[in-house]
Image 1 (cartoon, rainbow, N blue to C red):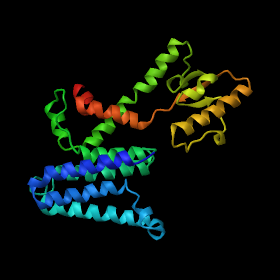
Image 2: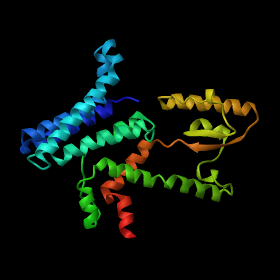
Image 3: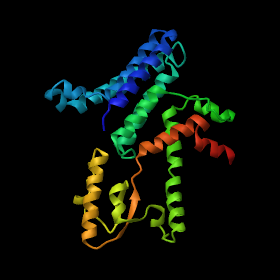
Image 4: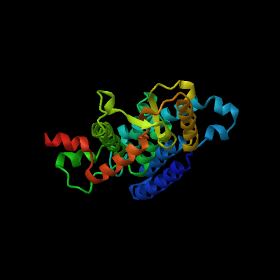
Length: 273
């Protein structure tokens, strides 16, 4: 997947944020450029451009960048505090977002690099968002004023992901095909429809070498399903059990919409208890 979209959004976010922080002084503006450049570092192929020697030590160099930015932001926060004439809250929000996204990626919670990049870009484009369109309680508004917007989006996305197993269960019940527990994770599909659906074949099991897990385009992914469908038909198999391929970016997009409308859904639910 190309990083061009992330690069354009990142540059736009850095420029816009820098313009908004100019009235707060040199310190605020400089710190914003530091964390903004840090975000962009994840999106630009600087290691490839600078040659093979740098590319071999890219992880070490990037680790040094993480350490340098962390020391800069933390020392500034300890020395000057937070506020318009000190370390702006949006700067710290971006700083926390990058660490949060990278940690989730390294832990395998965010499977693809695109998901982590999306969170980072979201952090620099909209570090904070304390006033959703729908009314908020005082406690929720206070929390949204300091919690990075990307964290709220991720929490909303995780909550909204419950819709997928519930929807699959409803579909299987309507078809009289529900079986616990797999009725929450997939559905049956005619083999002839397999090439045109973004799904993984689960039953009968498909050998790992037949599945192109490294497919980078929808065309490559479809080609893998065409090959699998042909082999299944040759074996006389007419229907298979599949699970939908739902990119986490789709859930992040839904989480972003929910966050803009209602803030942090998890906090909203807790406040109702």
